[in-house]
Image 1 (cartoon, rainbow, N blue to C red):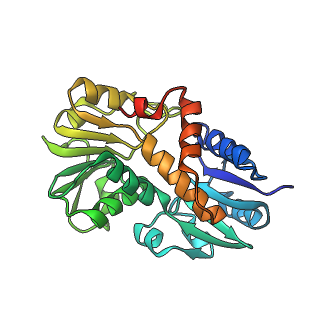
Image 2 (image 1 turned 60 degrees about the horizontal axis):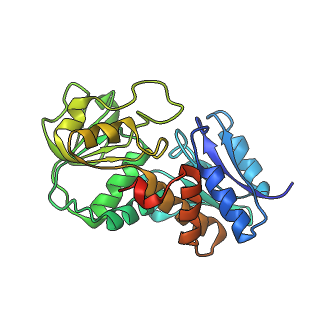
Length: 274
């Protein structure tokens, strides 16, 4: 079997990673394929054992970003501090975990010119994506009040100091930023097409980490309300480039990755994010 790269999680059918990476591999003449692999928690350890000899590396998505950590050999200090790994590089059977959600979101902030200094933030969802983007924000800024909407705040008693975990009955009347770190509105996930209107109505800027669909119901709603709104497309693009660099130890071709995104969406990247 030829070595390959994979996305591991459940669900994975929504992901554009196979189309993105396989285009890049083909144009870069890298002899590899990229697959999405639906792996539940009971089979994660078996996959990791298999990956040591068969994978160049693999991306990790929900719900395994935290549970993969004790199953691999080494974790980058920033990923360990975040408490989530979304890419694992294979160095001759030695598996090393990194977090490129953090680096991808950091690059997006620079590209978009977003400044969180002293600004209040409402995060929706308290999983691995939340931990990565909050880490990116606090590494680069000193934000104001930080709140997180979750289904069960009691599960987060050991959460970050100074962060308020609230249930959906405690939506703040206003926040400068709302960042959706939940799967609400993602292709392949049953449920509402967008976040509840009161969550979005009180913010100035809305950021959705979801990229498929590229214009989520929440982004569309935010723009209708006159908010500045961003999809997760840039974060997806940048974290993919950073993942490529971790796995193959070579610089990613940004033009090629961007070209791949435009082939997937069928329109100009700048138009999508405009």
